[in-house]
Length: 253
Image 1: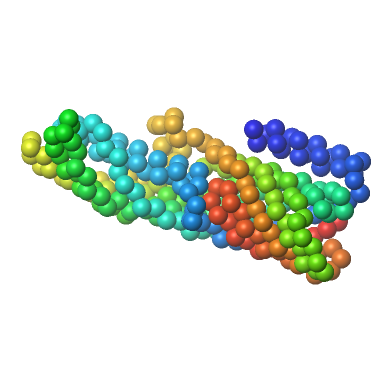
Image 2: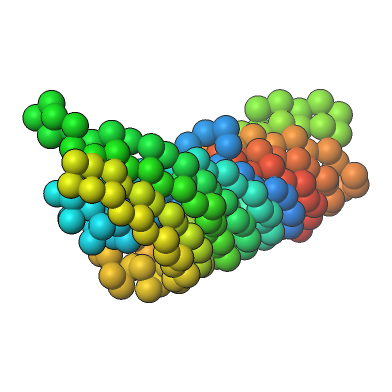
């Protein structure tokens, strides 16, 4: 889907000089990145990665107590930064524009596993499972976005824009998962303490359900302030593979 959107935007970029008089706009920005306050594809995927790895670690232990279904509870946070470079083709005297942007993302997803669950089978208490651990997933990757933009408001040097498109992100990074678990049941008790350090590439090789790429809609709003005839400062918030808040400079040519 994103490839088709990119092809269409590229065609618009190439054909735009024949359609409308306008200019090229280059943008550079730096900002922060977080999963809060909205759940994103990144959060859902990383939570699934951690959950599946926890179950993999606990499988030998739980099998001894005939426990076959367990879903750990994960408390996940996020923090990081992004650097973006993009190019836009302005249409209709700048009222509309289509563009492409590439972003470098560096962020950490610390998480905690502190949970106690009672497992039942046909209404009979089978076991109590207690887990704890403080781990993290760190990602260093690039995101490609294709968007269309509309100027909603302009007065003097100030203008407000909204944008809509798609964003594609390739996952790479590392998982650090220290885990302590205890099982208490009518068959007895047992404890397990183990730490996993793996790359997402290795996890992907072991689990086909972990995708190499993630795609999501991108919705943005930006405030531009014109400094001169061909330069502007801007602030933008973008909701896609998380929440991005960035500031930067736009240059018109």
